Image (cartoon, rainbow, N blue to C red; front, top):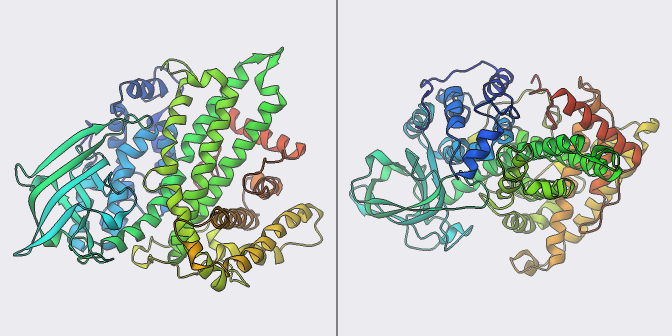
Length: 586
């Protein structure tokens, strides 16, 4: 327990996600108010000490944030994963260390429980979280990185219905502060896909002298997050603490990662939101050549481009998150693509903002209005490698391209409309319908061609949309032809750079389809910005640049439109992402 005001076991909170989002935002208060104990000044002071933000944790305890990670069936509030992401973006906007170190590490662990555990284990984990406890996800070992099949940590059967835990886990978030751990362990000495399991270890049941902690790992970013290690020596554990069946660990992990990869990267957009807001405040206050920096064309161009990147990232992440509910068998594709595309987009955008701030982005004085930017720049880096590396996602996508080319891309079946309608309701999260492999089936890429057929050919406002979108449809056809001929030798880790570039082209098509279909299916949206095709034209224009090429500037009238929208939201204190006024009604 981290706070002084733990929530009740039920932690009901406000009834709707919209009300909970408003309650959380109100509880955290104005981040720029130096007198706010939960504001940026206090966040930065904790960061300078490389400590978790204690007052922030107490506020999240009082709000009962852990209940957002627990399905309603187990006494929590989790109904829709896209709503969870939006709530967590509020936390990430304030302090990514709070987002990861307070809460999301417990979600990473608990998803495995909701996916594979028996009812008793699910009740036990729900009880821990609802009383404000923490659960650590002890997966990785420094010797093997993301190669989970080579995990050395053992939970080998020792007879009499017991396992013996032996080995080390390193760089684990909240390992010392957790009440329990979900551990990925070798349960069979033989090699193979059924040699590993996940085990639930509750610390208060570990015999004395059988477990010890390893020293904390310091980090350049996420400095407050408690990263450490643990070592077990002949520690007995009842065999019924295995999640699911013995040998099912890799399968469960691969399914659960589809949820956590998609949602975690989507939450990191909150850090870019704060970085963009900090930069806007700076350029409006900074005077150069007799005018504010915000009036300089190059500055406006950069800010409009970052705003577009934020919108584009949130649209793609939102569509992929909704896919977890609507097309769960396909999310093995979208999770990899979101991690690969969105993380790079966010990091590149923050780096461009640092160029606008210049020397001011180095400032670490907690009382400086710009100092929060440097923390966000450091804290956003794990979006690219945390939990799983971008390169691993790209390699996984590469191996699936030939089957996708044969089964899905031509002619293709479009995705369901509700995948894109921001106000459409969603069914409960179907943890039991997640699949290890999409089997070459996915419908998002094919939705672009089908959606273009529904576009009016006579409307002059849609001509540019059609021209740009048809380029991606053509590229998908060319990609299908090329990928269907890929030799097996080009599907391994040592594939050529050209083969890896195919994954970048495919991911770009997915993003274009997500944005186009989101625009098309939200023509009833109350915000005219989303009905207007200008933002979509900007996205398609941006995505049309070949990989590695210098992006051509946006047309001047589009850039003006985006900057005006950005300025209006900034002055109104609204969010810069897909839901500027909170969650949609659905």
